[in-house]
Length: 216
Image (cartoon, rainbow, N blue to C red; front, side, top):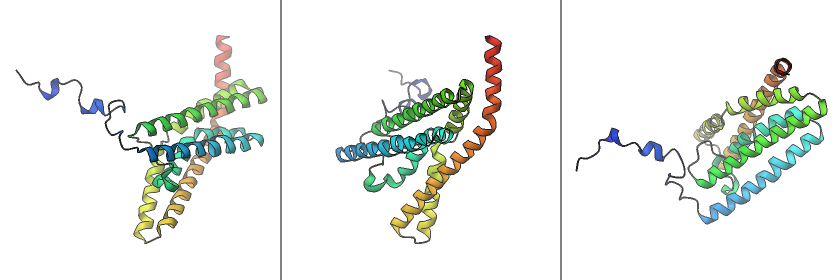
């Protein structure tokens, strides 16, 4: 029987590794890791998805809340550095995930982020009576956020950790400093998004109003 040439095989390793449904690497999450990370996900949702946004909304900080929600993935990326305390956030949100739990956790966080952004934008539009103002915020914030992937934060934190290690900084101090640097990076990104949104949102709102009136 004639042996098939490599180029004749349609389904190769590249294709099977594109999805976790084929990926055989999803066998490293032990029962202990599953429950500890499930607990970590619960803690993350209670504190970062519910409590902090509640405080921001109660203070009517709509733009900041929207930007905060749109960066839930980056916050989770920072918390997951070195697995977090007792590795409860080891699979919380990794830009490159090789486990089914990690995939589901990351997908849930992305979903919650989109829901949060949409809700705050609609809330803003309803209170300010600016439908297209809320829509313009949504159209600007979402692409900016997802064009700034968590890989950048992971890279920065890893480089900081390596630098501190090379200078003989103690383990726990390295962890604290690295996580702080991660959060500072997230705050910087949110600040950048705020400037972009405040600058472009009014202009985009006018364009959307003109488009609406044109097709009215």
